[in-house]
Amino acid sequence: MGSRAAEQRQEARQLAARLSADGVRNVALTWVDNAGIARVKTVPAERLAAAAERGVGMSPVFDVFTSDDAITASEHLGGPDGDLRLFPDLDRVTSLAAQPGWAWAPADRYDQLGLPHPACQRQFARRMTERAAAAGLELRMGFETEWVVTRAPAGHPAPTGADEPLDYPCAGPAYGMTRVVELSDYLRDVTEALSVQGIDVLQLHPEYAPGQFEVTTAPGDPVRAADDVVLVRETIRAVSVRHGLRASFAPSVVAGQVGNGCHLHLSLYRDGTSLHRTPDAAWGLAPDAAAFLGGVLAALPALLAIGCPSPASYLRLQPSHWAGVYQCWGVENREAALRLITGAPDDPDGGHAEVKTFDAAANPYLAVGAVIAAGLHGIESATQLPQPQTGDPGVLGVRERARRGIVRLPATLTEAADRLEKSAPLYEAMGEVLHGAVLAVRRAEEAHFAESEDDAIAAATRWRW
Image (cartoon, rainbow, N blue to C red; front, side, top):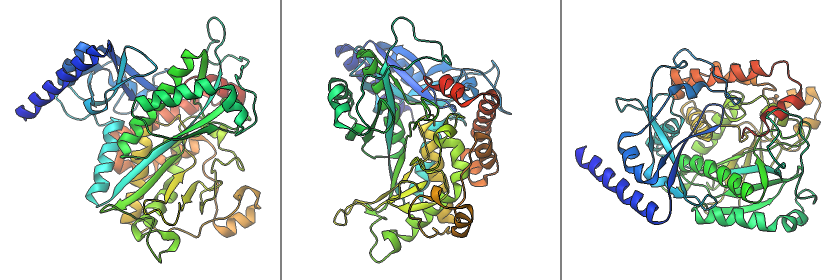
């Protein structure tokens, strides 16, 4: 242990020296709270080695912060007492292309005795990844990130929650080349910054809502995928600022319009072989892949409390809006909550699944960890996938949906939180402390907005993510 600690100290010192030589003066250490907000402590680059060795202090109370910076409490967390240590992941230290003089690293959280903090979401994602590996499964995950860009207001921005006019910098149609032309410099800088930072961009395109775009990044290890989506968002935010623009990743930027999703893509492998390419199997899915996806589908009502954690999320989750509001799956069906993407027949690595319901208010570490936990429970319980659905469930009558076994996913955060509270598999996977903290934040968010109109919810949360 002593030898390994000495190696880490030396690695951190060498990394700090390289950062300083490259002009980096500060390192942002981030974690994401249960409301989906990326929180930060920063250290001078020359203090990185000390941070890696001893950690950086922070309060455990952030686990019960809500999206509006109010503080609630759970049975185990809340109040001014206690301290944790943030330890940067040196393997993920990244110089920030759009913030000269800055670098970034995700952090894991431990107590002062060096034990893992039971509510650390990043370590939860890692535990679930390791649990899958112990079952002989490798998961590759990636996110699609949607955002809306507006011109930054002159002077000081309007207070959060204010009814402010939004000035869109592009007027082109949905998915139209016009938007790319109008913002070509901006979009070029977004892709360049991501590339410099080691993020592999698969595609970028205009989306449906005014001023809306989407970027898809390459899949990888689940923890890395969650790290990447944090880095993607903050990079887009930084590039936007440098262009006099403002980026919103909120689930509902304007009530009644199409909102921002953050779809989670996943694929399963065993011994390096895709489980989505099994000859003669239904839909090409090996038995473990089918059971895994069956577990995810069965858990979706509870998973909504993880992947759709804000009352604003449920403004986005509307039928016939390609958000996946019914508990069903389908092959290449963009109205199904769980979509199977077959990929090219001659691509041995092709084929994966997409959870369409999630949005960027979600803590990505919670999202990947909870989906893995649900899928592994599906394998353990031999969960079967029902027949896939075709077409839009939203246009079917109530009786026809019932005949097909299609039910509406929770339509409010309260409903989703109730399902999470009763989910034994997710409680076991998350542990009492993390599970309780997530529920406390969800209950507080719902209570805060219980009397609010849709427009007020959208305005209050528009710039939180």
